[in-house]
Length: 284
Image (cartoon, rainbow, N blue to C red; front, side, top):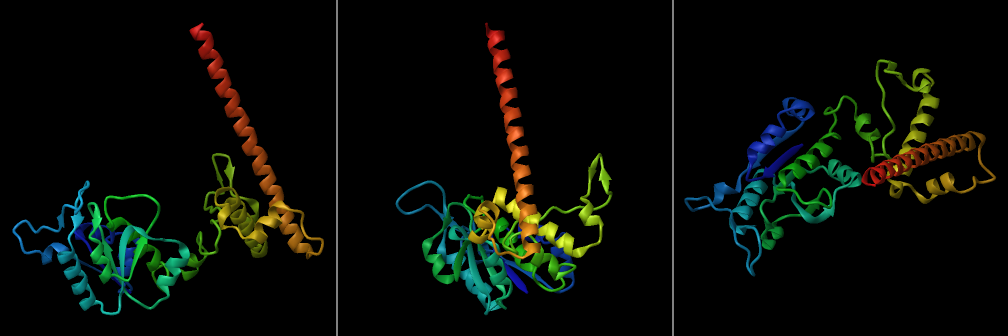
């Protein structure tokens, strides 16, 4: 798969791509990464790519002439690529979009913004806008690299096993379960016994319970209505014995976690009250 970045800072892309898994993917020929700098399409001595906005306002806006010329050059090199402009006004990246990209059979051209943003007319030469979240960064290079990294994980051979990409957080619609490695005991903290027993059915059940529990506390919006109902409401009268056991165990874990959280909150409140009392005594 080929990734081409239209960027004012190609060295940022090159440095990021020169390490770890992405570097190995490039060396294996599984991924090709290249850059086009819009400054190459300027015609003044200062190689100007931005200008002040019409109507006034802070910051500088990327000019359409060099940006569109760079996009056209990129399309010559990758004529069937999807052109994506990285900007806060696009749809927000999520795992389903990553998997859509990974399986679409296209290469990718990422148009990286900078300064105050793009001249609106530039978007006539892109296929879509994409954001990585509800916050603003100094440029589009890091967001584009994040998107490339997320896509590349689904390319066969990039990871040791494709199942690693398919089982990670959000691929299943849930947060990931806890992971452990050797030693078994580290400063009194032990790896759960179920993971050491070799019973893969029990391990799978434990991992799913832990994923559901983490998602329930941290990202309940990711749970389906049925999952929430099975966690919070009375269990259905008609339910297979194994299923009932699974959900009863999960509900017990969640109840215990809530009790532990309440105890910590109460302790913190007590310590705060004690500190305030000592402060009042000191002032008195």
